[in-house]
Image 1 (cartoon, rainbow, N blue to C red):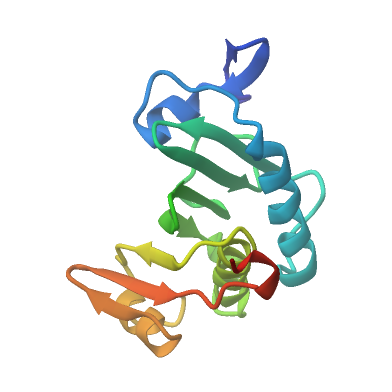
Image 2 (image 1 turned 90 degrees about the vertical axis):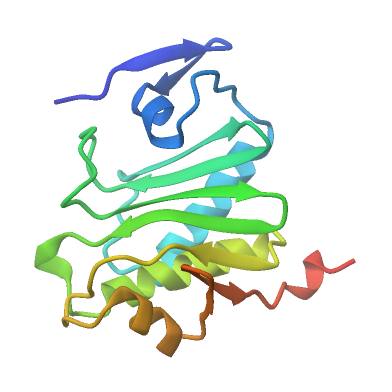
Length: 170
Protein backbone atom coordinates (compact mmCIF):
# COMPACT_ATOMS: atom_id res chain seq x y z
CA UNK A 1 0.00 0.00 0.00
CA UNK A 2 1.50 3.33 -1.04
CA UNK A 3 1.61 6.14 1.53
CA UNK A 4 -0.86 8.97 1.17
CA UNK A 5 0.50 12.49 0.86
CA UNK A 6 -0.39 15.87 2.27
CA UNK A 7 0.67 18.96 0.34
CA UNK A 8 2.52 21.43 2.56
CA UNK A 9 3.98 24.57 1.06
CA UNK A 10 3.71 23.07 -2.41
CA UNK A 11 5.71 19.97 -1.39
CA UNK A 12 4.18 16.57 -0.83
CA UNK A 13 4.80 15.21 2.65
CA UNK A 14 3.76 11.67 3.63
CA UNK A 15 0.82 11.92 6.00
CA UNK A 16 2.26 9.25 8.28
CA UNK A 17 4.72 11.93 9.41
CA UNK A 18 1.84 13.70 11.12
CA UNK A 19 1.09 10.63 13.19
CA UNK A 20 4.71 9.62 13.83
CA UNK A 21 5.90 12.94 15.20
CA UNK A 22 2.63 13.84 16.84
CA UNK A 23 2.11 17.17 15.12
CA UNK A 24 -0.43 18.34 12.60
CA UNK A 25 1.33 21.38 11.18
CA UNK A 26 4.50 20.29 9.43
CA UNK A 27 6.52 22.52 7.16
CA UNK A 28 9.55 21.90 5.03
CA UNK A 29 12.73 23.17 6.68
CA UNK A 30 15.64 24.54 4.61
CA UNK A 31 17.99 22.33 6.67
CA UNK A 32 16.19 19.16 5.64
CA UNK A 33 17.86 18.81 2.23
CA UNK A 34 21.35 18.91 3.76
CA UNK A 35 20.26 16.63 6.59
CA UNK A 36 19.00 14.06 4.09
CA UNK A 37 22.30 14.28 2.18
CA UNK A 38 24.25 13.73 5.41
CA UNK A 39 22.01 10.78 6.33
CA UNK A 40 22.39 9.19 2.88
CA UNK A 41 26.18 9.64 3.05
CA UNK A 42 26.40 7.77 6.37
CA UNK A 43 23.89 5.11 5.30
CA UNK A 44 25.92 4.52 2.13
CA UNK A 45 29.25 4.18 3.94
CA UNK A 46 28.14 2.39 7.12
CA UNK A 47 24.89 0.44 6.65
CA UNK A 48 25.26 -2.67 4.44
CA UNK A 49 21.51 -2.97 3.77
CA UNK A 50 21.19 0.57 2.39
CA UNK A 51 19.98 0.98 -1.18
CA UNK A 52 19.56 4.32 -3.01
CA UNK A 53 15.84 3.57 -3.55
CA UNK A 54 15.21 3.64 0.22
CA UNK A 55 13.45 6.69 1.61
CA UNK A 56 15.29 9.25 3.71
CA UNK A 57 12.72 11.80 4.85
CA UNK A 58 12.96 14.97 6.89
CA UNK A 59 10.72 17.82 7.92
CA UNK A 60 10.56 20.72 10.33
CA UNK A 61 8.64 20.08 13.55
CA UNK A 62 7.85 22.41 16.41
CA UNK A 63 11.24 23.33 17.88
CA UNK A 64 13.33 21.01 15.73
CA UNK A 65 13.59 18.60 12.82
CA UNK A 66 12.34 15.05 12.25
CA UNK A 67 14.49 12.59 10.27
CA UNK A 68 13.32 9.19 9.12
CA UNK A 69 14.66 6.27 7.11
CA UNK A 70 12.52 3.60 5.45
CA UNK A 71 13.42 0.54 3.42
CA UNK A 72 9.79 0.12 2.35
CA UNK A 73 7.10 2.50 1.10
CA UNK A 74 4.59 1.05 3.56
CA UNK A 75 3.07 3.22 6.30
CA UNK A 76 3.64 0.26 8.61
CA UNK A 77 6.97 0.58 10.36
CA UNK A 78 6.87 -2.42 12.72
CA UNK A 79 8.75 -5.35 11.23
CA UNK A 80 10.65 -3.23 8.70
CA UNK A 81 14.13 -1.73 8.75
CA UNK A 82 13.74 1.93 9.70
CA UNK A 83 14.51 4.70 12.14
CA UNK A 84 12.86 7.91 13.32
CA UNK A 85 14.64 10.70 15.20
CA UNK A 86 13.80 14.17 16.43
CA UNK A 87 16.62 16.70 16.53
CA UNK A 88 15.86 19.30 19.17
CA UNK A 89 18.64 21.81 19.83
CA UNK A 90 21.81 19.82 20.43
CA UNK A 91 20.01 16.58 21.35
CA UNK A 92 19.44 13.78 18.85
CA UNK A 93 16.40 11.83 20.17
CA UNK A 94 16.04 8.35 18.70
CA UNK A 95 12.30 7.70 18.68
CA UNK A 96 12.51 4.22 17.22
CA UNK A 97 14.90 1.98 15.35
CA UNK A 98 14.35 -1.50 13.99
CA UNK A 99 16.01 -4.00 11.68
CA UNK A 100 13.80 -6.43 9.79
CA UNK A 101 13.78 -9.85 11.47
CA UNK A 102 15.59 -11.67 8.65
CA UNK A 103 18.54 -9.25 8.96
CA UNK A 104 18.96 -9.37 12.75
CA UNK A 105 21.89 -10.90 14.61
CA UNK A 106 24.31 -10.02 11.78
CA UNK A 107 25.62 -6.65 12.95
CA UNK A 108 23.05 -4.62 11.02
CA UNK A 109 21.56 -3.10 14.17
CA UNK A 110 25.01 -1.97 15.33
CA UNK A 111 25.62 -0.49 11.88
CA UNK A 112 22.30 1.41 11.99
CA UNK A 113 23.13 2.80 15.45
CA UNK A 114 26.55 3.84 14.07
CA UNK A 115 24.79 5.71 11.25
CA UNK A 116 22.65 7.63 13.74
CA UNK A 117 25.66 8.52 15.91
CA UNK A 118 27.63 9.69 12.86
CA UNK A 119 24.75 11.90 11.70
CA UNK A 120 24.39 13.36 15.21
CA UNK A 121 28.11 14.14 15.37
CA UNK A 122 28.25 15.70 11.92
CA UNK A 123 25.34 18.06 12.54
CA UNK A 124 26.80 19.15 15.88
CA UNK A 125 24.56 17.41 18.41
CA UNK A 126 26.05 16.91 21.87
CA UNK A 127 23.91 13.92 22.87
CA UNK A 128 22.18 10.90 21.40
CA UNK A 129 19.26 10.01 23.66
CA UNK A 130 16.62 7.27 23.58
CA UNK A 131 14.28 5.19 25.67
CA UNK A 132 15.41 1.60 25.09
CA UNK A 133 12.81 -1.15 24.98
CA UNK A 134 12.75 -4.74 23.86
CA UNK A 135 15.60 -7.03 22.96
CA UNK A 136 18.28 -7.37 20.35
CA UNK A 137 18.34 -10.16 17.79
CA UNK A 138 20.61 -12.12 20.13
CA UNK A 139 18.21 -11.85 23.08
CA UNK A 140 20.01 -9.17 25.09
CA UNK A 141 17.91 -6.32 26.49
CA UNK A 142 18.20 -3.21 24.36
CA UNK A 143 19.25 -1.22 27.45
CA UNK A 144 22.17 -3.58 28.25
CA UNK A 145 23.19 -3.61 24.59
CA UNK A 146 23.33 0.19 24.47
CA UNK A 147 25.20 0.45 27.77
CA UNK A 148 27.82 -2.00 26.40
CA UNK A 149 28.14 0.36 23.41
CA UNK A 150 28.92 3.50 25.41
CA UNK A 151 25.50 4.75 26.48
CA UNK A 152 24.72 5.45 30.13
CA UNK A 153 21.50 5.44 32.08
CA UNK A 154 19.71 8.77 32.31
CA UNK A 155 16.56 8.14 34.31
CA UNK A 156 14.55 5.63 32.27
CA UNK A 157 16.42 6.63 29.12
CA UNK A 158 19.99 6.16 27.95
CA UNK A 159 22.31 8.82 26.56
CA UNK A 160 25.65 8.93 24.81
CA UNK A 161 27.81 12.00 24.50
CA UNK A 162 28.86 12.81 20.95
CA UNK A 163 32.40 13.77 20.22
CA UNK A 164 31.44 16.54 17.84
CA UNK A 165 33.46 16.67 14.63
CA UNK A 166 36.12 19.38 14.72
CA UNK A 167 34.52 21.20 11.78
CA UNK A 168 31.38 21.64 13.89
CA UNK A 169 33.08 22.89 17.05
CA UNK A 170 32.94 26.60 17.78
